[in-house]
Length: 125
Image 1 (cartoon, rainbow, N blue to C red):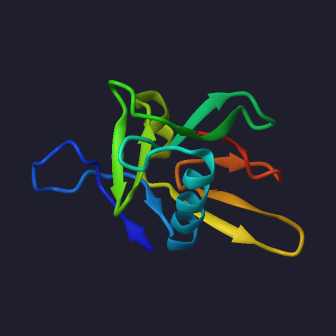
Image 2: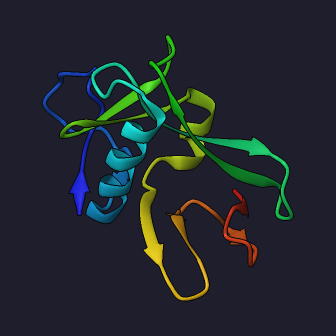
């Protein structure tokens, strides 16, 4: 498992951030190439939005560059962007990638969620 902290602050103390497993990093690297996004400028955007069966739902997509107030996490050659509002719900979270006989995809392991539903993409904070 690879752990990164924010790229911007240089205070010496690691900021509590997000963790991405090695399996998820491998899938992100492959997908960035397929999407035609420059790994030096772009990255994976993790977010939270209202909706879903538990009140909030996870949002994951690729972005060509970070936004002005994003927190940027560096995992070797992979960058992850999180907007300030989503970071409230995502700090301490682990992004994993799982493949089973029934499904495959990214999985959010979030200690901040008080309840989640069966779909795995909706939660309440």
